[in-house]
Image (cartoon, rainbow, N blue to C red; front, side, top):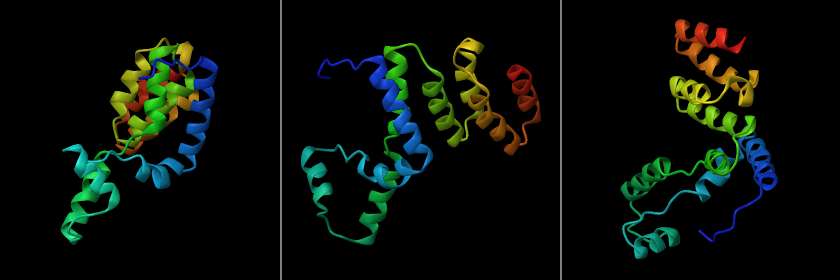
Length: 152
């Protein structure tokens, strides 16, 4: 929004750091709670939710937890998409996006994402493996074999 475009090298460093933090579980545990979107009904409700005001009933807490789980910002994937929009996609940015789709159970969507790039440009064996593993877990042998043949 400020009109500042980070350099490709800067974004590559951020991709490396966030992918490392993502792999260790940092984003899924501590930071994801801090990066949840506040309710956007009006500015006062967002402020009040931050301050923790409300009736304090367990029903309100359960509803807030359900909203928070739905609205968690996936920072590594957002950063990878931002990088790919500005610069040529790299193996790291595509791998982050593939891993996120696989974690949501969308193996065919992850494979479609890989298919949208030329095979030698961004895809390495470590990029294909999460998709192959998910296909095997889902007992989708035909898709797993097709992907295995493409990996060659």
